[in-house]
Length: 224
Image (cartoon, rainbow, N blue to C red; front, side, top):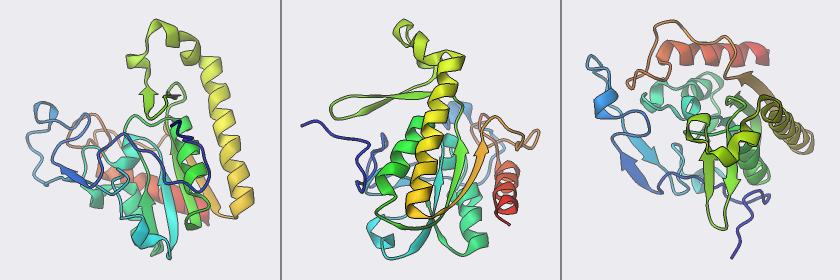
């Protein structure tokens, strides 16, 4: 049966395992880790494959949503050092981390379209992924395409102009959902200036705790 991954009021699709705990994930692998890193990290995926609360337990809560790619998900960091966790701590509102490693602007718009009618959303915080990424849809799964994974047949999609058009399309989808469901919207693009120089996560590829604090500060400053 064909699955409509953009169907409203449908639990979102994740390419991570469900109800599983991992010690290593994505680029955060033993061979790439900072050997001076002392803080333990686990990746606990909920019943839908997201690194966040059980969805069913939060349906009666007013929630924030955090959307983006691996920087939002928190690759290379414990949950407590991610910017969505910091948003929750400062707003005192349950914040569902819906970030997915290798996510794209397609991923952001698709997931928000799925969940907007399920949860009572107070605010949506988006760290928009780099524009050149995109999703391909199969009958029962989604493939995330990044520039370094692209094949010759993906060249058209990876074009700078087409990537920008895809971002505009997805952002307009988000704005339409905002108008429909009346949530607050706060956006930062991945390529903007939020990183703290020299601040790295355990995998030495993603930005670390200070950069995540900086993101939270930027989101909440824009909120006022």
